[in-house]
Length: 123
Image 1 (cartoon, rainbow, N blue to C red):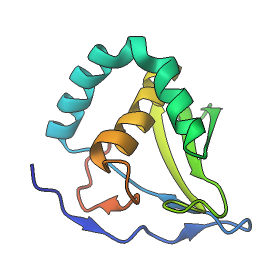
Image 2 (image 1 turned 45 degrees about the vertical axis):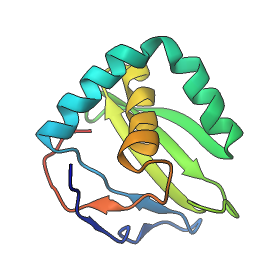
Image 3 (image 1 turned 90 degrees about the vertical axis):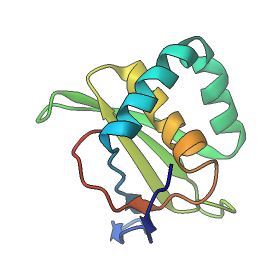
Image 4 (image 1 turned 120 degrees about the vertical axis):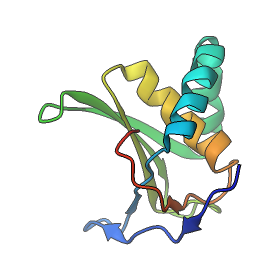
């Protein structure tokens, strides 16, 4: 399935990290939902792999939007995604983790995170 990419938007903060804004198309959302059903039992293994690859995984609850936010961060000096933050939102904390894992492993194929040009407001 062809995807169009552009450089990550420079939405940075005082710490020098840039947030990668990635929205899924309807087709990608359907693909993710099936993948997450097939991989929920691998949640611990997926998190272990991400942490082992040098990523930081963190959570917060967004009271304004009533959802969990999972942030996957390429720490300073990371060879691929250093100083980039990939966020995912869901009303279920496990789904937020799975969505971050899916974006990293499937959408970006473990490579540099870039912003998709599509704009549907999901994920």
